[in-house]
Image 1 (tube, rainbow, N blue to C red):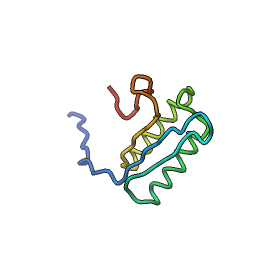
Image 2 (cartoon, rainbow, N blue to C red):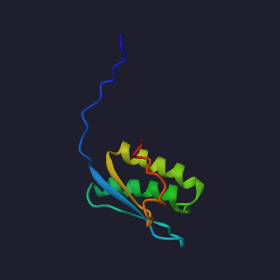
Image 3 (cartoon, rainbow, N blue to C red):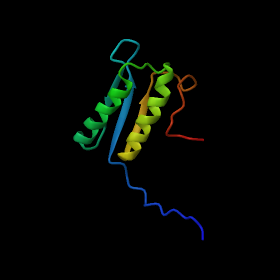
Image 4 (cartoon, rainbow, N blue to C red):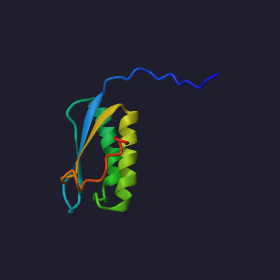
Length: 99
């Protein structure tokens, strides 16, 4: 007998969230949305801000919290985009894209 997991067909995303780094002066982050249920987006925005409110991207805790934010957005079936204001070579790796 083999262990074959049956995966549900992938559903289209129900919304979009962009997290923008505003700079070294607090508040560091802004959460923007292009589409989706405003209540769902606001609930996610509150969780994101709770995790990131005092963390700039170069803080070691940022990487762990960024992964948590990515998992949270994935559970909610939301597209997640990060704008750290850094060239791609300097930006921390995106946890959604695992190699």
